[in-house]
Length: 411
Image 1 (cartoon, rainbow, N blue to C red):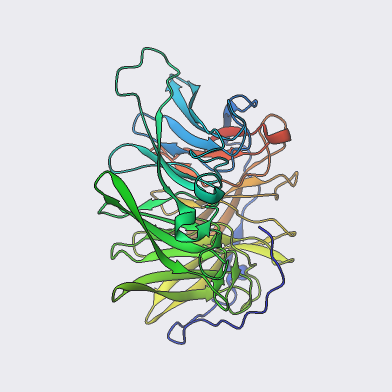
Image 2: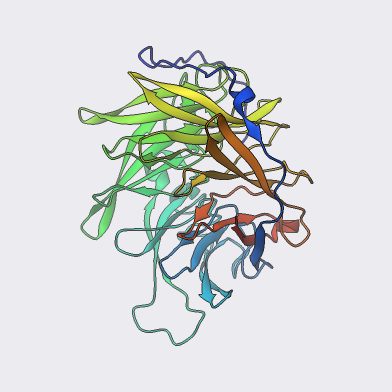
């Protein structure tokens, strides 16, 4: 995402206390690279089956994987695909090839299963005024005798009807009532993006803009929203905030509308990095975890914890990074509280890596699990990670001319 010069004087709400735990870098235990992990490429895209798998993958109960490609496919406008598990291997099935018209095109974000068992996702363009769409995909009504069976796509909403345009990275989210929440990267407020809600109304959907980002404010939400048990929404913006270097924000219900709280503005403290493209994830007690790209010096993995009437930020690990390094996709937590993530262009070969952060008595232990080399394993991972019940990690990578891969890592 481009970062035009901005003059922003926005500041965090005064009721939100922010404290950096000094000395966290000294507490960090850094382990050597652990390249003995089992890494497997599950699929390599060739063009007709898709190109540029920017998003990660979603798992179903049978262990099948689902994702999107930004380009390629039958119409070269992107795809939704399934990798159907067949013993130790996977069979690729192109569920939908976007046509570049009313059905949308070029999906950046991934897909997620809704309460009704259908797949849901977004496209970055297409639909009304080319602003992008929210869509669903359902399997054939009749039994399909072939392994490769297309699904039926339905466009639920054209997001330009809400004034926002271009849904970007990350998946949509559902609340307990089946409402959909998502973000657009541009438009909405003063062309800085918005947060929207889709509610089912009979056989159709009604769209509502919950919040439009303006100036001065958080700006350009590039990733997904998450919900807590109370229905509050959390996300990140790539820019804006009191130093124009991005924010973590919360939206809470306020009367008939929603109110924004900026939990943290990047650029206030050194050693954190800035410009968070990735979203945040939440653990069982309400702590948020995310990553930053570089502010020109460092990138990081951080934790935001509720503390009294505010939030406390802790640096879990600092990367010595260049201009676009650091995590671009969401982290994932395992059952033991370990965090896993990827960097876009760090590691031994400068093409990205998979890492693990393990909590310990003295801080967090960093382990480099795998370094991408673009020697059949792809490069530049940008998608969210997924973990299965056995602790296996799944993700996607770019490759030469978009010929990316879907991979699996057994830690």
